[in-house]
Length: 401
Ligand SMILES: [Zn+2]
Image (cartoon, rainbow, N blue to C red; front, side, top):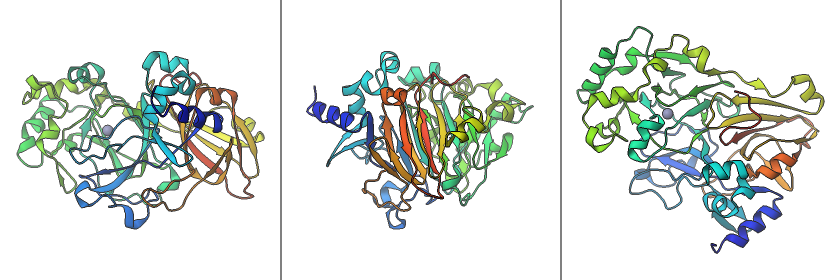
């Protein structure tokens, strides 16, 4: 039992099954912030130039950020706020166990195995890949599926590049890809010349199973993903950024470093050259129930990420002047995108500007029990909807894949 056991039980009781979380900002030394995640303009470099700009905010995270030797003690880990104290969500999950995440997830994972984030980058990312389970296992990790959704509330401007490259164009040969990988250290290896770009549409998203190369564009992105940081960068120059060779070999077992065949094996070839890639991976929002029925009750809810077993996500809109009780089959984290009101015993609001280190009332974690009993949300505004995004753990019982 940790010294925080009593505090965490009190926090769960007083929140009636809902924990309040603190904003969890993450810098990246290799990125330039797109400045759309509501940090005060003076605070995007609050951690100092060496740490890089803050271009991510992580949600419901029990996963530490891997940011090299200068990484802060709790970087990447969400904090539960109770009165004037903070405890990591990671500790909350290990103390409260099934009481927080439910028996099904606790038995299977003994952890909260996903997190979500805002990714807010001014420039494009290199064509990179997340390993599948069997490749990740060789370095003691798990494979990483991820999803991208582009919320309208944080996308008034698209920054530098409004397209994402996925996989390779049908007809590209393995020899051509191999050649690019051999050329990684000889300047720009031009691997995206072999790829296809898709224009990004606000309010929609993409599903990216592990093994698929992707070079994300620069819309501000809400990204539910499995709790794993496994990846390798296959493009040597992205925009104006040069990618160090160590990132090509990141998460390669020691005895395969330098072996191009390994890099080729990590690629799920069929998925990368799928001629129906868009059809199979693009996600338009899907209503959870018939829209008229939901609107008659004062809300609208859409599945926004629904093609993976590892996580799922919904966008909930509560119409002005309405009070609704929403039930879900599993625990979830949420972030406010628009509006204000109450959720259970908590105030919920959407700040326009947040100082680094300031607390908010825009992010919570809802226990499975509270989710099943139903969460009551009231929107007192006469004009403004409440909009929130909700991220769920693996195998959401309400989601039929
Ligand atoms: Zn990725």
